[in-house]
Image 1 (cartoon, rainbow, N blue to C red):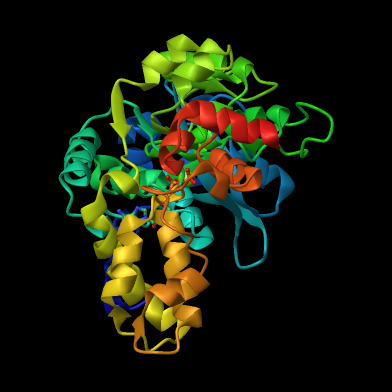
Image 2 (cartoon, rainbow, N blue to C red):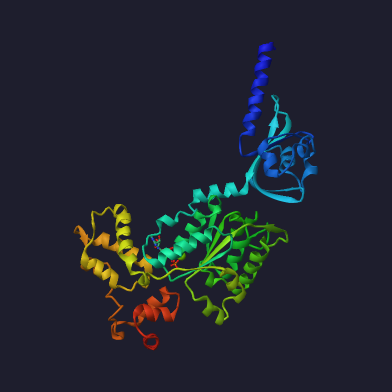
Length: 438
Ligand SMILES: Nc1ncnc2c1ncn2[C@@H]1O[C@H](COP(=O)(O)OP(=O)(O)OP(=O)(O)O)[C@@H](O)[C@H]1O
Ligand SMILES: [Mg+2]
């Protein structure tokens, strides 16, 4: 080989090493005897190791269990994108790892190489692709009323803190919007936001959704085992929606997780440390649930440290028109409507309505109005056609209400009779009478 060519070769390999040190993926390589011959900078960082701890050491003496690289030498085949726990010096690192055999020109295996990245980064990517990430931020929360402004101020303060948050509020007030905004405003914004609706799962499934399960943990479980929401949210936020519906035996387990910051997958006794901020939300009156024996008092107080009560729309009248205009602008394009806005008669009707379904109900009414409206402006008549009922705030004599309407509102307000009576503008005894009539 000429001197010049040799020089070029060493320049190339210098550059190759520099390139491999510039990536965030960890890379390690062993020879066919199982000695580590190379590790890039990210590998040392991810493992929390020094060069001398790793280089020229036998790989199976460094970690517990059979390292992926050894499996590759045995199987002589690549193993791609597997969940991998690297136990190094008493610390467990959670990774996604791929390993490949390294062959010489004649096809003979001379070693193995693996490429890995921290689980958090992989999860964030998976969430972005699957659309699970938190989209909303505080500047998208519309409202000028003193009440909503003070709730936003409080929520911003909660984002700077690591404690758990409990959000209460009637259905459709924006609880999820606030949960996502808190996450995006916090230091955890770059990590996953994982949501679980406790009302959507049969009792025995919430358990495995939250904690995951080990290979072969129970019949019917997927053979490979599965990570639960707690692990998936590691470093980020776990949003437990409709927490009031969580079965009581799981509430005890949740409390333990909050206290110990560790979980065990079902079928495993190995605790896994999790760093998760919990934001719980409910439209139920949790104190009533406690009195009825459906909710644990200790969990309630533990979650309630940072408490956010989102006021119903009827208590922030000045936001109604602002929100209505916002939805007209936001939905106009989606619906391909040429509507310019709302006329005075429509605005009056909107302000007079009591909004038992809150902002969601307003958004739905505006959507329907945009579909129906043939003129430039949405009028009172269009709103009525869109299903906006007579305003109940002042008149609603009980005779005008039928039991199914009352039942409907009661359901939307999470079974809370006090709030239903208030929303309908009737007394509680009248409400009971109407419900009995059904
Ligand atoms: N202040 C607001 N500004 C803009 N949009 C809002 C506001 N509040 C609520 N919304 C919108 O209203 C809808 C309902 O909000 P969200 O889903 O957060 O309510 P929720 O309290 O979680 O309701 P539920 O109890 O029924 O789950 C969403 O489309 C949300 O974007
Ligand atoms: Mg919700």
